[in-house]
Each structure stands twice: as C-alpha cells, then as structure tokens.
Image (cartoon, rainbow, N blue to C red; front, side, top):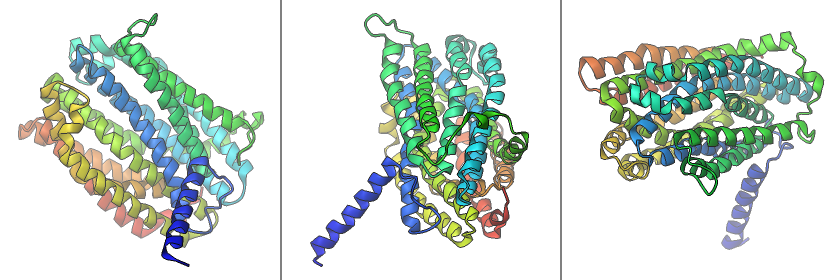
Length: 475
C-alpha cells in the first residue's frame, strides 16, 4: 500500500468518525472497542454543544455592549448571569445525577430503567424551578442591588433580570435533558438542541434589541426575550426527540408518575452535585459583588466582559470533559474499571492540549478580543487585565474539569463537592477579599485569586482520583 493510499485511508476514517459523531450513533457500544474513538464520538458533539452555550453569552454581550448606556447594560447582564448560575448549578447537579444513573443503566443494558430515571429527574426540575422563577421575577431589582449594582444600573436592567430568571425553566430543562441524552450516549441530539437554540437567539437578538420594520426596539429587554425564546425552542426540539420513540430511551406516560424511591435515589446523587455547583456559583457571585464594590460600574462591566469571553473558551473544554462522565458511568456499569480509567486519561490529554492552545490565544490577543465587544476604553483595560490573569490557569482548569466529571459520572458527587468547598470558600473567597480590600488591589486582587484557587482544586482532585473511591460507588 502506497503512502498516498495510507494517508487517504487515515483521512477517510477521521472524516467518517467526525460524521458519525455529529450525526449521532446510539448503536455504538462505549464499553468496548477503541477508547480514542469513543472519546471522539462523545467529545465532538459535546464540545460543539458547549460552544453554542458559550455563544449565547457572547451574542448578548456584543449587542448590549453597543447600547447607549453600555456600562449599565453589561453590568445588568453580567450580574443577572451571575445569579442565574445558581439555576445552572441546580440544573447541572440534577443533570449529573441523571447522566450518572442513565449511563450506569445503559452500561447494564437496561434502557427501560434508564428512561424511567430520566423522567423522574424532569419531575424534580419542575418542582424546584417553579419556586425560583416566581421569586426571581418578583425581586429582580432587589437582586441586582444586592449584587452591588448602582441604583441607576438596577433601575435600567431589572426587567432584563425578571425575564431571564422568570424564564429559567427552559435553562434547567435544556441542561437536564441534554444530560439524559449524554448518559444514553447520544451527545449529538444535545449538541443540535443548543445549535437550534443559539441560531434562534442570534437572529432574534439584533431584531428585538435594535428593532426591525414593524418590530420596535426593546433595547436590553430584547436580549432577554431573544435568549429565553431561543432556549425554549431548543427545549421543544429536545422533547420531540425524547418522545418520538426512535432512540434508545423509549418514553411512555407512566414514567411521569412520581416514583419516590427513584426520586430519592436521584436526589441522593443530585443533592451534593447541586451543592457542589452552588458552592462555586456563590463564590463567583461574591467575586462579582467584590469587583462591583471596589471597581465601580466600569470595573464590574470589564470583569463581566472578561468572564463571558473566558466562558466562551472554557465551556467547550467542559464539553470535552463531559465525555469522561458518560464513559466512566457506562464502563462502571459494564464492570470495565480499567477501561474507565483509560477513558479518563485519554480525555484529560485532549483537554490539556485544547486548553494550552486557548491559554496562548487569550493571553496574547486579549486586547483584540475585548475591543470587539465594547468601545469603552475603561471597560477594555479592566477586561484585558482580567482575561490575561485568569488565563494563566487554563491548563489546570482543563485537567480539573475531567476529574470533576469523572467523579460525577461515577456517582461520587460528594468528593468534588468537598473539594469545591475548600477551594472556593476557604481559599478563593478569603484570598480575593484580602487582596482586594486589605492590600487595596481592588479588582486585580480578585482576578489573581481565581487561577490560584482553580489550580489548588485541580491538585486536590488528582490526589483524590488516585485514591480510587469513585470506582466503588454504587448508583
């Protein structure tokens, strides 16, 4: 066989695998065969899925960053997103439980039990979010003020907050149902749902913010309407595929009857998972409030701009690391412990390569990236500083993400919860406060505390991973 023929054969296999990953193939057995192929089949749609979720934030940031009162608008959007991270935390916690249980049941070749578990998770999500939506809608202005927004910024942006938190059920369902699909090994549908949601948001955002023909300009409120509508359409797409009966998970109406034994089992896994991300979210909320009080409106806007750019790059890495959760869950279910370990190491290697590349891009091109989203020089200067400092820990972020997803995919949600508690509440928050207030470094002190804490979290996760408790968890 000639060298040219070999190269064509290699490229043909690569193209075939990529096509298979994007199309979605529920017939592939993730408990046997090539681990590299298994990681790629899961990682490609998961990366694209998270890339679309990160684009949501950047689309809003771009359009509101060019409104007349851009510092108020960016601050309102950023602070609202900081609060909604609590919703994300709950959604991710429940979706982690759903992914772990669904993946374990699929690994055990029991799709009926997997489908039942997924539907019980949806019942839990509805019950929790009904409280959050009402509370957030009523107290939107007070929430912004509590977060450190000025009175003018809170008055300007509270209607945006009302719509975003009031419509947060679509956020929760988007995360949760995607978690169910990922557990079943169909990451492609999860990816496509966010592509659809994001395309709708990209189309609706400029139309509703700036107006078009007979459609009036809603300004900042238009961004909230566009984002909520886009996500709702994504959820409808998910529900169609969940109920059409063509996938591994066959859903029937009786699965929606509350099964309190199953709900209790899910809550047992989800509770520390939710706490795990609430701990992280509360830390980010505290940091946002600390930056707002020490850096003013421009400091807060600059930090929120940098955060959204950082999340644009980090969320795809989180998507790649999600492959570890599915592979660990299914292989533990199939009693393939060594294969589960190899899957973790392969995923971690790919994530380190990705994050190292992103670190170089964000460090050296921060100024050019930031200038695309805002013309305000004061906002730009703070955002560039924040982005360059935070990017210094990207490689550790990449490893940490894979290990966190390994624990969660195995159903060992308590380990990363304890790690997050120590890393965020006992290290990041005190360090940020001391640097910002005591040493009078202001927002810069907050920026420094972020990579320091993330690096410590990753190092602790490596030690706990090697101890191997995650291999023995029963779900």
